[in-house]
Image (cartoon, rainbow, N blue to C red):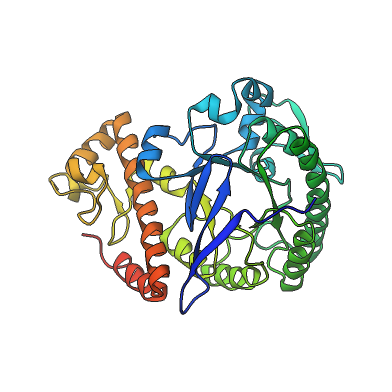
Length: 379
């Protein structure tokens, strides 16, 4: 089943591969590049759907592994999918659950058929197949769902990488057929394939060719930002992204710092996600134009300035560093809410500014100037 393009490119930067555009999805148009906050259990921790919409997000991510285990796909289907269950009215991308199986499950066994694992919640044995991942994500009514894949770690040998590539390709074929059946039954969401191959150039090229042959609506790059040095990440990202077609949205999985985001945008990536901005917010780190600050430090005890004087979010307009430090030190829930809002606003504003720079053809200069300030001493 060949599908039409859901991606429309709009502008290209003069000196890089950066581009703007939009992705057409069931719950509305998503301008790109776009950062997607991670809502692991159908919620972005410490922030509600109304606040996410207020910031300007059009798409968030939810996690199939966690929702598959609790409360389960059928309950979520009964609630009207994740949208009806959670109250989020924008788009939702769900991962396949594979990465969490490999990273969280206390036991796992990979076969050609799928992956057997034990739940980290109650120890019960489960078996996830490519078809099962599609069925679960269709029950969630995901606007974008991901194929089940095998992600290998930094340092994996070539034999392991080849096996993961073979399974990922075969599972993409099976996922496509399961997705076709779900679409015939009325499901409207899109399926993205995933390029693997670890850090072997020939394997990446082979994986891209095989995954693209299925003609899926979008393409993701997996297995990067898994512990490798930044220079290695950038080299392989540039290589893989150059293999991907212009008429498909490109999704780089698991990046969430300004350095990685700007590198990805410069290589023509359209979508990216990470728990980093929300997790670090709860742990006391706040983004600023002059680099992240650790709010627990004593130097902020009597600092009555905003978290970031260049930021226009309502946290920076209404609260000061001394107050946020007080909330953090007291373990107040409000701290996590305010810090999460600020960090997500900061990244969304960064990506919006990047889109404007691309439209003007000055993205390289914008990224250089932003990172120069970001790496300067924090105020």
